[in-house]
Length: 403
Image (tube, rainbow, N blue to C red; front, side):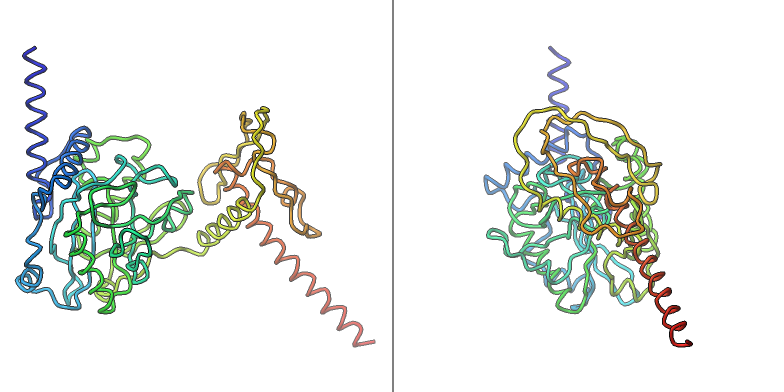
């Protein structure tokens, strides 16, 4: 029995140390937690909040906000930048100076975030997101019944949409309970909200909010090894590293299924803009929105159990990588699981491939990707056909006029 008891004691000491250390002011957490310890820290913080043992260890002196701002020489109209680290359960607030460089103003312990390491993928998965977001003035006015003073981080962003992730209303709010949001306790949430709204009212149109699974060091990437997220996390690390080098929030863009990053100039750092989206990706997002709207307008499926065959398409090469392929899968949701969308008004000259009812179920993300690409191609060809028709009509008019 000696070894198990010793292991329990070591685990308890680790958790206690984590609760005491996490949230300590600084640019790097003093502790690198195991997956099990991350869950324990959140449990302990929930208990502390429920029993009124606040503020949590590592919380700045919230009663001295004005003094702390003055001591660090933060201007009243200083731009703001927020970073979140899920594994460390920490949220950082950075403030910019006249040179466009940002300094760490405060690190706050996150009382609770739900789910585990890895991005949010769909509505209802109770997962906190990861990625690059921005808060604007409209997003600081939460219309929900519970958290009037909360910041909506803007999930899903363009990256999430083009990668078919769903969900909404991911907030930085008070309390210590969450189903996808970041719960900061009431007092901490009020301070962050005050700082954010002051920056927005001073003219900062977008506050960057960068959410990471952990501090993106090589050591942590090796420690939290998750093959399904390796490429995604490597992409996040590019943005993380660029800020670490320059101390200016990078310009973030989305083109295809990845983030792109460009160093910010002084002016761009003082006045961060929204996430940029290239025209091709913007069109894909518009197509997906249109497809999802049409799917939502379909009648409710009948609850039948007949087994049917549906084609599943593996994703267009143009923006998701890999060739278009088809495989047959079993779908046990009933013959009317998704009514196939017939073309609205088939255009003469369009290939039957682009106008016939879809060969797959729109319940499948891969099918929606295929449908979006097909509509995009059909639109382009239609425009070309219309231009050709106009050209022919003009030539006919000229010939008639010369007779």
